[in-house]
Length: 120
Image (cartoon, rainbow, N blue to C red; front, side):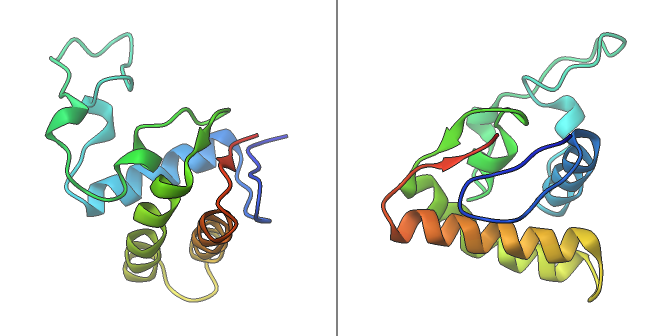
């Protein structure tokens, strides 16, 4: 059980993918816990609008973690920056690095095929 994708063998548990995205977001200067759509019922702080975010990773960060898709255009925008950030955060032989790079490769494959990248 967990999160799979089209175009790649990358896989995470839902909680693992959430941690992966939190670390990616933090590297981009974003605290996901404060963003619209990432609300804890205990957290009453005002939410930050995604309209303020300019990173190419925005489509990946502001996305459901259990369904939906990214367009080929979004895949093109996300893949290169994702690869850079993953390599900067995680060391060699780390699960998140390995699967993060697989995810970037899958995004590239979907874009090259002009197909949507599906979260399943």
